[in-house]
Length: 257
Ligand SMILES: NC(=O)c1ccc[n+]([C@@H]2O[C@H](COP(=O)([O-])OP(=O)(O)OC[C@H]3O[C@@H](n4cnc5c(N)ncnc54)[C@H](O)[C@@H]3O)[C@@H](O)[C@H]2O)c1
Image (cartoon, rainbow, N blue to C red):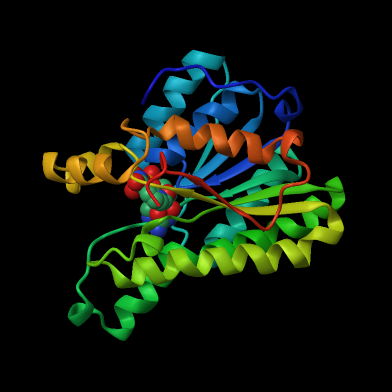
């Protein structure tokens, strides 16, 4: 995790923030940066050890540990249950970050109907149901912000993971239609699309010196995009500073796409 301090948006202090996949990678940067705002942060994840380590780190840093609820977002009833637990613990959720995802590689030929359904349920389906579950809470708060993690991958037409690409492209459409549905209640819905972000998992599984060369050739800015760069955009989108921003795709990719 990089240690640069995030900008502070005073309006986020005390807000209930719910993050899926908040235990590692970009999600951990969300959990940490929102905790540093003084928000009441809760997250779900399947990575138990990483999530508990993160809780300890944040407890040390801020004096308060975020609430971690183990939950597989493919299980919609469990996800709805977790959202209810967070409401009971912290009050109505004002910020939802739909972040959990999985970019395991798969060839076109390997995809079966069951694999298709599984990829859609890990990368897309939970975002709809989490938004549906927080709607009554955000209505009571007379506003809210939902941030769906998209990707530039489908804009680049990257091969080797077609169902992930399809999920990520669909998120752009989901955001736009939810923004229209939720707008009358002052709930803003945006997509946040990262480029190549240097997370532990990406570095371990996919990034090589050749890939870095390709990324740097593609990016306008010849520098690595880090999880905190994405988290800083999430802070802005969740804050009052973005009060007129909805239905859009905010890209943090150093100018690659
Ligand atoms: N890292 C990148 O370069 C990049 C680029 C574009 C988009 N994204 C998107 O950003 C988001 C975060 O990506 P990341 O790189 O941090 O990924 P990551 O794999 O490092 O972290 C994802 C987190 O979600 C959790 N998770 C995965 N499946 C889950 C499930 N079924 N239930 C609950 N939690 C689950 C993981 O345990 C992990 O903590 C994803 O939506 C991803 O598609 C990432």
